[in-house]
Length: 221
Length: 221
DNA sequence: TGTTAATTTTGATTCAGATCAATTAAAGCG
DNA sequence: CGCTTTAATTGATCTGAATCAAAATTAACA
Image (cartoon, rainbow over all chains, first blue to last red; front, side, top):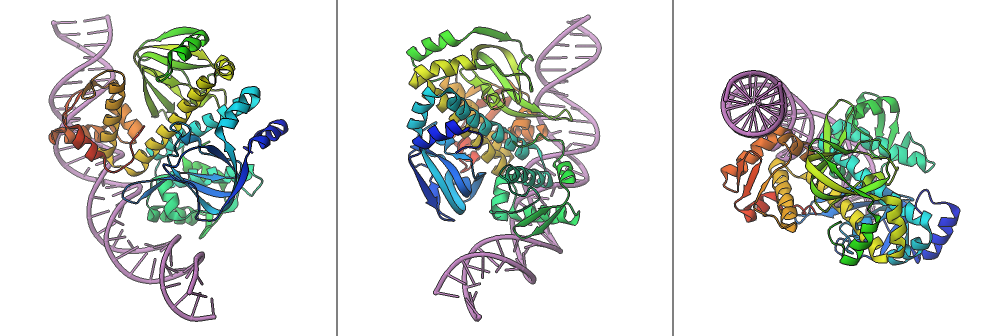
């Protein structure tokens, strides 16, 4: 159930959902090149999507949590263009895309909602492009933490204290930085008393100053 | 008329298109914050989309040519999230989005096609993220030129010789580089006899070696 | 629980690209 | 057409992040 659907829509969408699927930490929801049948709505857990380069390095294209929809990139070629890997035990609903299209034909609000979700993904990606194209290390990390914070808040969790599910290397891949640079940026923000870092546990002490760190760049949605 | 529609679809879509609009070089098709009513299909010309930062600097998020669809990002909030500016005199068809949704309800192939276009934009953005996150200057420029080359070819123009419509600064903004770095990368590729540069005129002499320059990174679609 | 493997932090050094600066070339335009 | 403005190239220098390296911490698991 994507964030923002009303009860009626959720009910109808419930009929579309063929079945639930559990993915263990480290497991794949889908792989690059595998054929596309369904979108996946995350019910619980945390996943990353990444494209694997020939030489083995991976580029993380996103981190995804409850309520988000995965697989939108695969509609285009009917083939998944990235790997989706669970960073903790997760549960997803499989939504056969053909069925979704069929049903959305009769429910305009569902169709509109689906279009908005796709559009939001495009806006998000533009935000990441801005981040990668024009921000420096510390600004990128601040932006990343504020984005996570906001998403946790939206889901009813603390916006100021949370556990990272991903490694420094995965953060670095997403932010276009090396893991050492990510680690140093964490330490720097901690030295300035803006955040407290205890390995994966992050506490934001001064969200206003963290926002300042991000600079004048547009916010990632 | 987005690339890839069949005759029947184009005809139906023709009924949706409310009117054509000309934009002079330097003119705005839409501005950040303006309300969203319509998508725009480029009939001719060349445009850039960019987000403007508070301090006046701009980040180019894309270059767009004939057959491409603009405004997808605005569906989400019903407000444009970027400026679209013509880099040469251009002509677009306005496609009222509400009408498009309505008609696509009765023509499954049109709906599917629209979904594929949105999805392709997401895939493209992931490609740019990869470029910005993991490629170095020369690789980025090679990737950019190959992408342009392919798009010109698809439209019946030469893949090996074309005019850039944008400045070095705009290329740099798109690629996350400073204009001097872009200029140096051009000169380097020319020194190696891979391309010939005469200001905005580009000639690709050895497309195979240009591809090698791009490295092993996934191609931008 | 102990042992191994993976992750994180921190320091030293290097380097790609940014910045600063000056010249040249091209594009507008009265 | 000549004048002004904008764009592009190239050089010199600086700097932020990458790389190399080592230690410390945490997680995995037999």
